[in-house]
Image 1 (tube, helix red, strand yellow):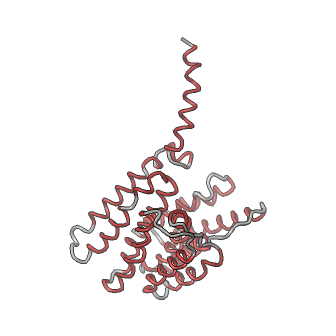
Image 2 (image 1 turned 30 degrees about the vertical axis):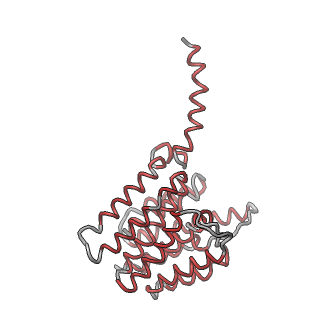
Length: 288
């Protein structure tokens, strides 16, 4: 699951640079190296991604743009290269870079759906430090999630629940890791309580926002998969499989060739293509 998550994460962050041709050679280098399940190929893949990121940031700065930096996202590629360099069969080494990314990329999702001020710039520093410390002290994972959501909620602009999906994703992200302190299996607590629901939340919101309100069963299903591992091992895969299939169903209009070509859901493209086809019809009728 962790290896698959790295491929998904790499694909997501590559979208930041697409379709600029300047970065294409480095992007292709990362994508060509990524499928090889050997740690030195992964080091090179994420090293290439880090170089792409540095060049892109330099270019943006040269254009005169000023914006608050999302350090959680920006630090994930170099930390991924370091993690794969240190990897010798210890899968926990690979967790902190993924954690940096899923927390950083969901800042905007939680901010928009829970009426929060975005957690960006130096205000992310406590979270960044806590995530990096999980390399040495894995049991800091629940504390890291608690710090993250405490800082988000501290910046709340108004009261009230505006999104059940965002709320349940946040509850899963705190409850499952804290449960692992008693139940154990910290790696699966991260995968099923944080990584999987956070990825699903971000992807559906960014590609198929019209379905985001329907995403709330996904964090519940992934969390139940973790808890069922300890009592009903034979069925713990069922909620995971159902959540994965449901996620694909919600994002289905962003997975076709047309959606991949234009970088957005087919549903957003329908008005454009519908208008184009309507414009052709009068001419086609005049030929008869």
